[in-house]
Image (tube, rainbow over all chains, first blue to last red; front, side, top):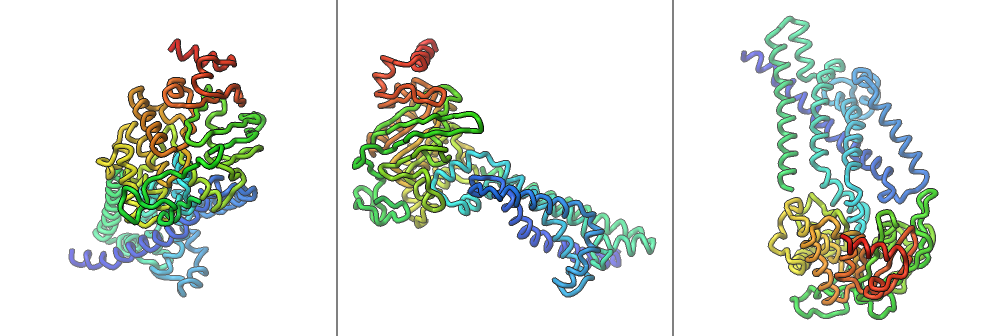
Length: 221
Length: 277
């Protein structure tokens, strides 16, 4: 039992590091992209320049292509990029690169679809208040859609727990890697069960946390 | 010249509130003949001409009703007046200043010269009543302390000071529209545009909102332009009325004259339907 616990400890930390770091990076990159997509599709926010339609179209295509890649292929494809960015192509830190790339387009879509659901009247009212677009976006629109952003973010993190389990392929470590190496390859059913249970607890915990935060925001309104 | 960004440099010295905040005083428009002028406004959506060469002048300090059926073009007209849409042709003037071609920060500044209230209230659910009213002042760069002081004055003006910290989702329809009115007036605009602001409210709440609007006009000389399909709204508070049908203004004049002696078929039908109802 003690052996199982000591084996779980490091992979659990690795999984958490991969999930949290890649969520943070994806939030920055994908979040900005999502805001950009929304702004491009709303003429009141973009000013309605005629070329924007093509730019939005191109951005849509790129995001769809990125979302189409099976993660395991993406992971291998970006090995050179990982080496370029973090100096190595193996290990937990290196795995953060493909995880972030996988999560960014997902978050972009979450942010874009949340913002698109805002009642047009809210934007009208904010414009009529004599506010600039940046202020409308950050002081009104994003707070308005916070509950749906939180639920989208929860979905993303849970997907990343699953993806991070594949990171063992590039030596990323984590709970999935532990389950494969000890549980599967060495026939250690106890470690397999412990690793999978930990992943289940992690997913349940993330979902519970996400739901609680979302509920708290909604209750305060 | 009024400048919402610099509340401390307003021309009027403080009267009834402690310094440094000047009293609530909506931008006076009495030195111009019209607070709002719409000149030859045309707006098309595809093949459909919603507004066809419409002209309308609104005297400073007056309450002007624009009445017509659904689809007559009322909402488009008031959105153009409120700078939420651009006309295909024609001009919009606030006082003597043409504002219809503005863009960027000039457009943002021009929008501060008028407040806008909507049928669906369009309050920000993520903010309290106070937070909603504070938004135009935040946008105009007011200091936090001055903002809160001014917002409390405004909420007091609309009778909601005790509900300042309530999320707007927990207010009644009438209370929400009062918050929306306070928000629309926060930046000291000279004009208030109202797009069917009482259509979603019951008759008693409608009357109380209309009485509030009239008292704001009487106290502060605010110019109010209101679009409505309810004749009783026009009858209750408007000085002038313009009847709009199929994208044209078919009649315009003092409320008493237009409603008592309607010239056009559209007006006669509206009056008759109101009596039948």
